Image (cartoon, rainbow, N blue to C red; front, side, top):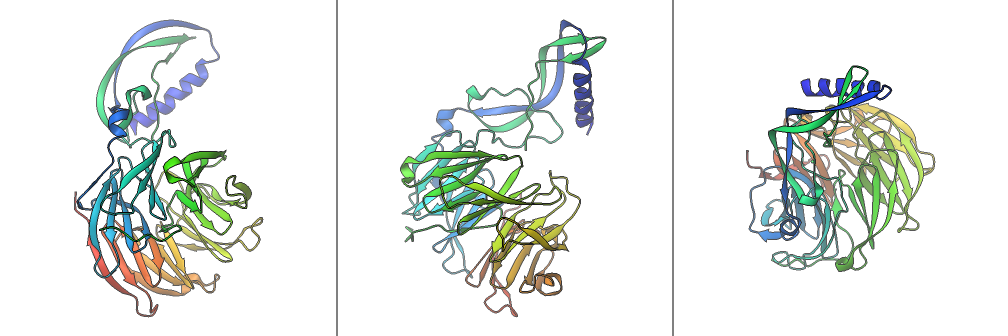
Length: 425
């Protein structure tokens, strides 16, 4: 907190000082900061490999395709799980992909981020994945998180990819600008941090509600930086190409596609884009809400958005919002429901699944959008939940406790059928 207060005061000095006359002197200063740990570009771009299964310790996003469940190990790669028998899932491989957070699969090709790059990986043989293409610097600002209360030291991108930070004391010579008795120290360029062979069918798999990758036949939409959406042509996965880039005046977080529309969850609302021309998405409307981090899923006439506290979005409420999208150009709020700390969510028919943070998994009948909160079907308490994928009567859930699966084919008798425990760090 002290550093934060100092930084705020420092900015006041800057703004005040800029109006005055100045003299320059030089001074040595020492401070503690997050110092970048670099990996050379050559080493980084040769780092993809497949290994035997490893323990799950920090699960992130997940994706399901053709009987396999792919689970992100935050910042390290992807666990490959044979889920042909959901009651007995089996880890079969680990794909080491440095800096990985997101993924999508089309046919037999896995698309994944790796810090600043976008990879395409042929997984025709699940045990022999082959990197077939890489677009460099699709995600130009992606870096790991450092220690929270320390500033970030100067970055030299020519040295390679930042793969970690070390808190160190730094001594450097800076210029003092004397503005009418006020001192502005220049030269500190800080940055701020901002989570056996398969038989593959055509088309895309299914991701959770926290995804920032979304497939649309021959195109992949990615949130490159919070304010920039990029369209990648994947017609030939071994020759990917970014063909469109859109900047929006909001911080984008999640993507969800339904037919010819792309729904984007942002920190200040939901954006709706028309995909009639899939190469060039066009915004057609927006729905605004309080500042909050929010995933969105869409099912027929309604979109469901969760808003939560306890994150960088500085929101003060925990809510489920139901939005009528029958007019795609004029979405409006139907009703808000209080929640504990909702994260990811999913729908299947009349069922709505909500990962309510430390309050666990909640399942509702959503057939009446005005009475969802009173139509709770089940509540699995006392474990921290993150995201879900409901599909064909099986719910796949990722949380701090690992990977859970439930049989909900009989909504009145939902049963947990498996649990892959994570390794305690």
